[in-house]
Amino acid sequence: MPRPIRIAVDAMGGDDAPEAIIAGALGAASDEIEPILVGRLGIDPKGLAHVVAEEVIDMHEKPGKAVRSKSRSSLVVACRLVAEGKADAVVSAGNTGAMLAAGLVVLRRLPGVKRPAIGAVVPSRQGPYVLIDAGANADARPRHLLQFAHMGAIFAEEILELKHPTVRLLSIGEEAEKGNVLTIAAHKLLAASSLNFTGNAESRQLLEHPADVIVCDGFTGNVALKTIEGTAGSMFRALRDAAEQSALSKLGGLLLRPALRSVRAKFDPDTYGGAYLLGLRGLAVTAHGNSSADAIANAIRLAARGAEHHVVQRIAERMPSRVVASARPSNSTE
Image (cartoon, rainbow, N blue to C red; front, top):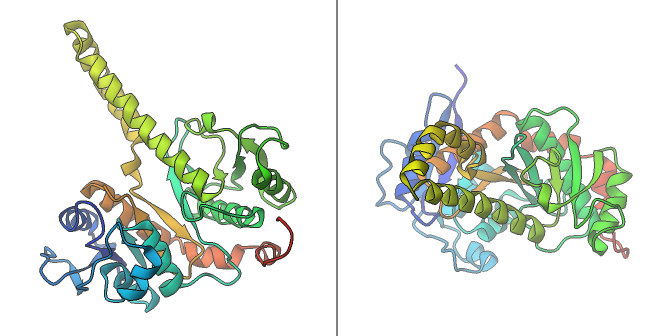
């Protein structure tokens, strides 16, 4: 029998850690997935494997400094388990900046990758797509967006099982000349690439599956992702309030409940639970700080799926050499 996929779980990261993290790990545990909790000695692992790490990186700490000064923190130790081959992936709902810093220091970048990027699976009315970068790089150059697009396309093929995925660039208009200096220059690189690039996409299209991969800088992507999540949450709360206004609306709400539950499940960010940090030598998944136990369980399953599909190896093998070369520093704006 093949061994289960081992996922190192930062038990101390997140608003409701360690209780929600442990509950999520228990929910994800199976014959195929073995969560390894990494955290303080006093936690109750509920029968799961437990690696002791007495230090904790808090949300307010400066990421780089915290990773360097807290080598025995749960996040750093969890990443080290992956680097040493003792785990197949790491999941954390802790400080995202610290997750990125630990990834760079402990896991390290793949050869030729200039900037790792967060690839998030976004639910939409027409099915899920990949948004990259969703928050790792507030500032980026056009050549970085080209790399992000290639990593996102490989991710879409391996995880979403899409053949020759379409790629679009997030901008303020669909015309090639629309946007700022970054998007206009990135459009030229993407149009000249081997990707299935179909032009720009506008933010109003993000809930309608504008493409299989949407590429942007991390500042724009993080704002877009949180706007989508906030909009979906507000709309469902508004519908719930409307259904409580009168006896007739309550009856209508009761009749519509099954359909609304189906729609809510389609747009629920907890469905995937986390996002991949792509471009590293090891597989890392970052989850929301306010993740529920269900979200953590889904993040662990997402990490296991990435390990099963060898996402890191696929990116290393398939990143075109000319794209790797394009990430090297130069004096141009690209």
